[in-house]
Length: 238
View 1 (tube, rainbow, N blue to C red):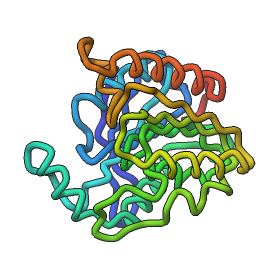
View 2 (cartoon, one colour; view 1 turned 135 degrees about the vertical axis):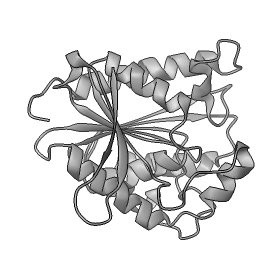
View 3 (tube, rainbow, N blue to C red; view 1 turned 90 degrees about the vertical axis):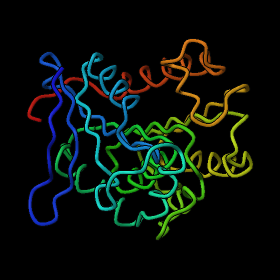
View 4 (cartoon, rainbow, N blue to C red; view 1 turned 90 degrees about the horizontal axis):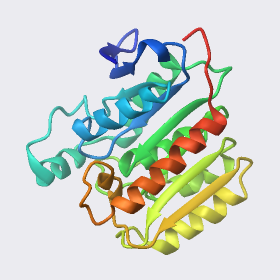
């Protein structure tokens, strides 16, 4: 696997990482949108798993305008509070435009903050295949400048969506159910999965065998790979 640091062309470039393997050089692209911690070892690990499945993975640096976070959760939350969400979503859109083919499907895999952003970009790309983990139906809280709520655009999403939420999460279940109803009425096909014993960030159990949510993590990841596998395939020309 190779990892390259890239930038979008033109004025005010957006940095992103591109993960690829020789045998995945022509695979479809999956754009991975992180949580408030940014591109850390966990998301690098997920990117490696996806390249093993034959995909190219692109990870935008959504925080490049505010810089690195101080260590720990408090540092990540402080940096999150400095983010201009509309500008960050625009940066993601620019990376999508630069790295995907408008005539072919591409994947987006978003977590928490990134999961909310993924639903917003899904509303503007009919060829986007979207998987989210613990996305906020009313938008991720704490932004310096908030952006449109996912619930406001859910009805216009034309591509397929798979969403994962845990029953032990602090995200309001009623809001998730409302989002699910809006997605069910949208043009695209939607699947919402609940995990009874899982809390926020439960996919961490994928790399921590003794994690309380390890079973939910493994089950959801199998579903995610199957979902992408049913909608994406090998292509040429990327």
